Length: 393
Image (cartoon, rainbow, N blue to C red; front, side, top):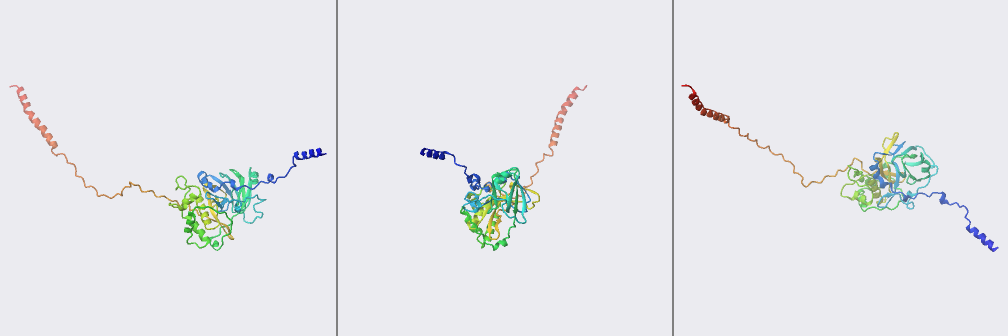
């Protein structure tokens, strides 16, 4: 009996357990945002490698609507990036249901996007996104790996987009409120992580906003102060401008002896830090600028890549600001004065007229002729004598 019980117990221990339902084997966890580098760090690659190449082709795009790739609210002294989900909501990417927003509204834009030279996990969207549908051969894979963040209005697919992929974006693109409308609107209280920035940021913030008394006035002062700089991608033939937006690069931009020179990457990164140093909530957005005329299919090239800053206002949401100078503001560095710089030429009086060279004596030819005649005269008597001697008597 005891032996049987022991045998039975042994069988129970050795027998394989019944099938169990393990949740982690059936539910894919949300993506870890730390697995993806900041897209802003690769900003200069677009204009360097794909300046004239179609990166995205969009159709149905409303005029002046920017295409959004990523929203960045954390800065560690090296790059703007998406913050940790535990610090703010910008890092929480979740699966969506049938649509991004359950209820649709009137006035939505149906935009078709075809991927060209773009490659990455960030899904191009715009405005307030209500739905994203993938098409083509990889539609199922891209849909299965698609996640969205409603607080930042951005999406990503862990499978990554590549050339030939297509998607349909249903979005609302509200008009930007005027500065007059923002004058009396308070800033929204939005939780954002602490940022690290060089000391020059606080110095520049104080100098730029010395005469500003309201929030919108301070934001405008910073925007206009940066727009007074100069534009350059730093490509061949352009004004030198290093890529990147780390602390050292921004320190040279804001605190260097030379005027400010950079592109959207540097100016947007700088404005975001200046505002955050004044306790104004701000984030940096990377995407693509679209032309004013958008009839039919529009090719967005690497030269259309851009970055801007958003600030939240009560009743208006996140409002965009554009601190980058116009592309025609080009700084021409003055050439140093050479040490052997020639003296300016002074008009000298004309030299005195030269005297004509001495003419040969007018009787030179006569002298020569006279000599010949004298010689002939001297020889003549001898000839006469000889002739006389030979003559018959």
